[in-house]
Image 1 (tube, rainbow, N blue to C red):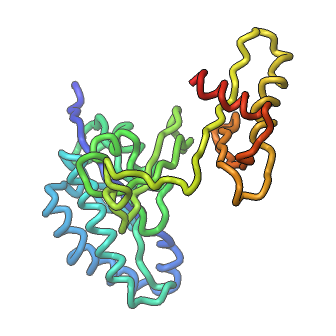
Image 2: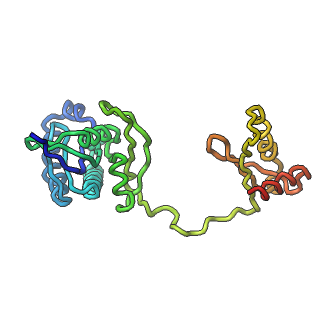
Image 3: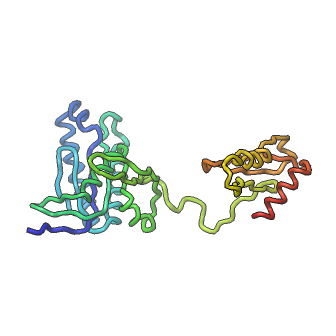
Length: 265
């Protein structure tokens, strides 16, 4: 029999610290979870056109036809839980970790299986309590469609998945449009600035690398009184940048070096 497959967005969630909560107050925790399910989770899933595939003691698995709906649902749930937990003591707060992936899934006997499901469960484990972690596949579909900011967590090696999974984190409370508006002019420095870029060794002789690096360092290492200097920036080989200063009345040698940079660029 050929299995039934479809492309879907999968939301996996579990309760952070579930065993501790049950150990401290078994009946109270279960009653609060039932209330959260009835008052928060089920209405949000319905509103965002999701299908609650199953629940476990401390978690749930939801399928969506749209990853945008999945992320919107997760954000709504987490924000509602933040509001509900505001007045609760820290040790009694119920917080969910959530992971979202989009991929191919197999449907069988009212359940869903496959890598699309497994990756959602694994990135969920990377989320902080109260957090949401979408996979790169999910992030690609929503990054330009939702007014949300995302933190790139990089490649993550997760359990039982052969390849690393690039993972992101939803920055709840932040907006993707809260940064500098597109096209807005950048602030200008108080003094004229010159970027000193590393030279490239064109000789083919590896032993000349020290000379190339030395030329840049020599012209960015002087540190006179900043009040009479112009800013120089020398990006280091590792990709970071350091800002040094150079006197406006620098020696003839350094002026020639600066002139050569302007000509070469």
